[in-house]
Image 1: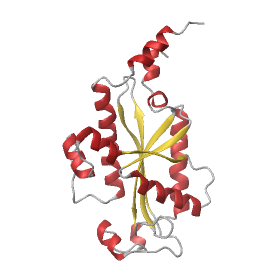
Image 2 (image 1 turned 90 degrees about the vertical axis):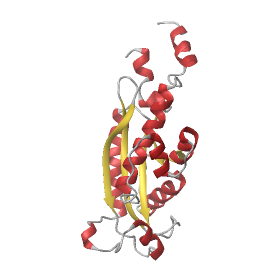
Image 3 (image 1 turned 45 degrees about the vertical axis):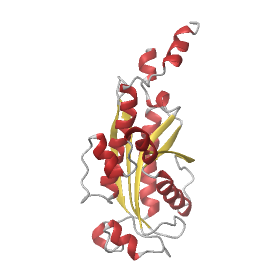
Image 4 (image 1 turned 120 degrees about the vertical axis):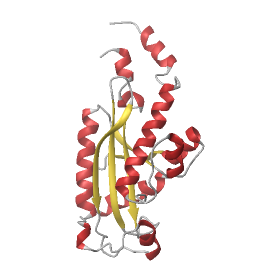
Length: 223
């Protein structure tokens, strides 16, 4: 692989991390006590020229875990009328996370990355719920870094002067339908587009590949 192509890989761009965009819908704000109701994951890929784009999408409605707290205000906010309705086609936290993690590990390995890192809007919230659900399910092979994340609220504040997802997308030229918002599937897809736009914008501005790192590699003695 040429030096330029090597720099245009996920493992080189994100220091060995495999970025995965996540959004969750919940029945409250406390990850330890409140129900996880929906989760979506969008993996990312980088083309030969180093442009980042969405890859695969995996989405589940989740059955509240036994004893979970469900706040009425949260349901009114995310539009989930009955978390226990069979029409939701919901699965357990364990089943959903196992399938999501399986897909992440598969694509992470193919990309040559050492660990997944969560990308989310106000990432601490989503990260805390995913980690809590993983603990409840006793999943030992959690691919995500235990605390590091890429927060698109912070990144879009830097890149576009906006921290609200809808406003950041609008400023970035990404269509956003407020009627579809607060669905994990819709919000994850928009967040993935936003993250890709920020990363690609930085590349367009000349911020990547780093000139110094490329120069240093070219000066390294050849075997």
